[in-house]
Length: 107
Image (cartoon, rainbow, N blue to C red):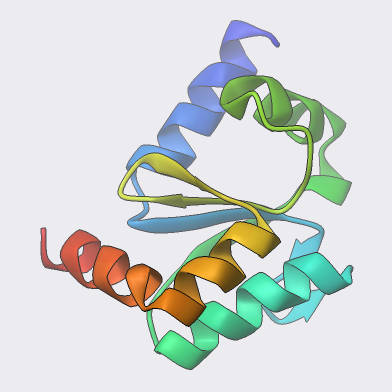
């Protein structure tokens, strides 16, 4: 990953309380896993931003190195990597995601 790509990723995850690296965008997810994440965040009614990794091969590969996580989507809350679709689903079911999001948005 180039220093420029790392700086761009750093900027995205630190300047947005909730950020999703996904296939497609929040209005038109391009895979089921990305759609799951969007639906969960929409259900919580929280503001979040996304980037379509299909539009940028450097970001698509760079985010995998950045998080040391091999799959997309990747969710960052308050600058920290939370996980992908399966982890978000599990956290939502346990009520942990709601708490994490509330704390992040309050800070």
